[in-house]
Length: 191
Image (cartoon, rainbow, N blue to C red; front, side, top):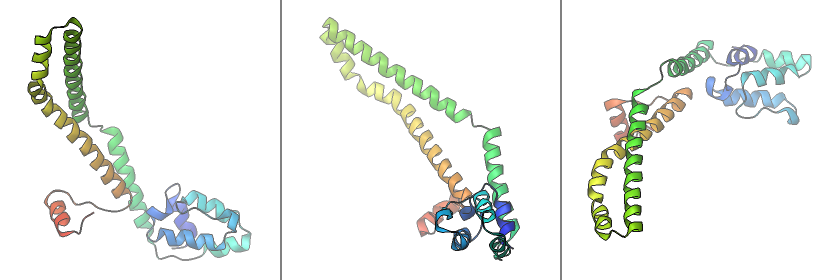
């Protein structure tokens, strides 16, 4: 496929991630561009089109006709996959996990504020028996809040993994899930 069709198809996407051998294509374009007009490594198709159109007509024709071994379907599939993922996220926001995390945070925050306020009151008033009772009650508070704190930590860990999976998918790297993911991690073939 010729270079001009590649950069038109990529459009605002990054050439280096949307096209197999993308960095080589950017390097090929940079080979004919003057030093002050070189494309960055993360150039988009639109930037490449603008750079090519700024060249004299003879050089434009030569570079537009340059052939690369890239299938247009691969570019379109990568673009469509990313668009589908982003559309699914936008139209189907996950509401249960954030709600549970928010409520867990509220319970933990309420427990901490009430316990601290009671302790401060007992210290100010000088009720040493109450201070001792509050200080000795920490196992109960940890027991009540421990499960909720664990839920919060798990929730934010899941979000981190989801973000990583989305970024890997946008770069064309697949992360196996379930048993396949466990086996690939054990065998060292994963991440």
